[in-house]
Image (cartoon, rainbow, N blue to C red):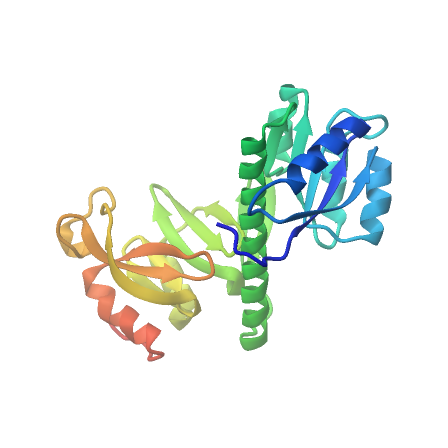
Amino acid sequence: MTQTGETPLRTLIVDDEPLARLRLRGLLEGLAGLPVRVLGEAGSSAQALVWLKEHACDLVFLDIQMPGPDGLQLAQSLEALPQRPIVIFVTAHAGHALRAFEIEALDYLTKPVRRERLASAVERARARLHERLAAATWQSTQAETEALPEGEFLTITERGRLIRVPLVEVLFFKAELKYLTVRTATQSYIMEGSLTELEQRLGERFLRIHRNALVARKALRELGRHLAQPPAGEADGESGGESGEGWAVRVAPVDEWLSVSRRQVAAVREALAGSPAGGGR
């Protein structure tokens, strides 16, 4: 639930139909408990780009079929902005949904827009913006407190792209089936590899909390008992609890809980207390 006094989402509406812009503005301004401030309107992609060069905004509601460059092209061009606004498409045509999500639109609303559906989209946009701010703050803090030697990064191949991920941004590695999930504050990646090899390579900056998880010490925030299903094939001795209850640690800033094996609880406690952990797995 949005808190009273929260800063409104700065919003731009882009649609070539004036009546459509007017109706959407009215719906947005009437959303109870979800502060939205419509800062501007544009009737074309060209007008929107001119406006965005002079103003910052958090959220863009974007029609697709417009004269000149369409909404999909405009959404792609927004990636060049220093701070890319969150994009929600609002269109009478449902056939572009797949393409819209390929360019990382948050949502896709069809006209006529229902108030409940719009409120849900705005709430998601608000949550996404908070995630971005938390991630940016966390990364800024880490950059000030920890400088890695040049060249310490992971090279990940994903969907035909070669991606460099600085190790300072990695929160944890998690083994799932034949692959590893690499989690940062803003993204998840899939890579091949072995947790054991990574543990040996990364040293004391990362802690093995479970046979399937390796976590950055700086990201550990809280240890507690949680009800959870143990990973497939794990015995109670590894998952650490009875009737599905076991130890878990909260990882910041994503606030994700990861299972801790019983034999590693002491090491996690020591890490949270600021002492070097020396225990084995």
